[in-house]
Image (cartoon, rainbow, N blue to C red; front, top):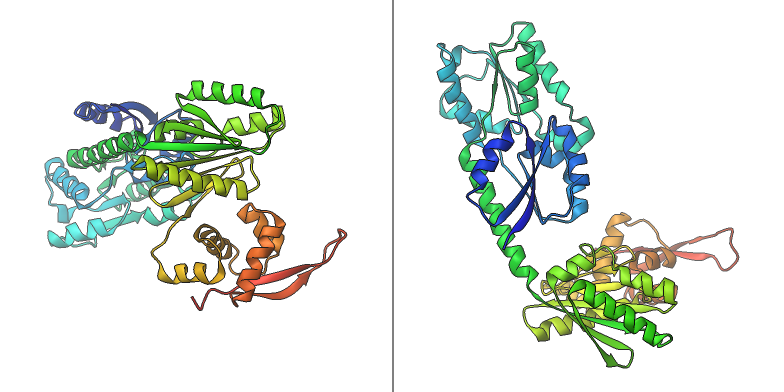
Length: 431
């Protein structure tokens, strides 16, 4: 069993990493090398089909975190801690005849606390240490990060005679400073940190494999038996292409047997199920899919039936997935989101029982209210967010109004014909 892992790092980092990674035969590694960290988002975006993304440090990870999130894959990166800076000081002792306390240093680092802790432990004064902490820059906005800014920071201090040596955690900065003739030292990545992150990636890989073999059952429901033979052949071709087993149960219903890996593949990691569009657009028949994951066949079947009901309630031509981790993903093909299927929150359970609104829809409504920051909304706004009909949205709102969790606060007039729309606000503060 091998797990495909993409690794993003600098030219300096990669040879050493690949040598150490030989100790982990379950990781099938493809390296992606950048000259400057700013290239990492593009590398991640254009990377092919992988199961884990590995970053050589906090900078490439933070810069490419949005692109990594789009891929919906597990991510690991090598952490920076006190050991990195302690090793740097050790290298300084070998490089200079002077005491460390006699050296003026400029340092760039993700988290100045790491430096201060080591200096305090060694009882070294901090007056001659100039620190550029970029952790908060990365957190705020990747557009603000620029390699040249760090080169200028160190080079200016060097040119003005304020420092004896520049210490950098960015390999491309180290390379450019050396080209400029600056006395420069790169902060090393300890072997222990690389090995620990490889162990983490390997463990995730094993977990993914076990999950990938998880029992998965699906149901497909035809909203009409029109052109049944044509659809039947389409579904048979679909099962052949995806290594799934599909059987017609009667009453417009098919059952599908496959693995979690196969499900993730055919839905492009829960983003789209192409067979829905093919049947609906080419043949003109509506179809709904529901897939369930489970540790047992009964659990997977029960979750699949629940998922199918969600697909039907959303108007068909979509797919839902219900996992054994009590999560609902959907509607796939209509802008999928992930929601809680069950909850141990007693107040939420009481709200569901009191209003008659299911936990999944309640989860969506909580998110909807949070995203809108409690701003007024119409039944149409809620219907579009929940992916339900206008009538279903109005029924949900009525249940909230009847139980005093929602109230009318105004009216929206449009240029279109018809009655003006009522505007509502939700108040869950009393929950």
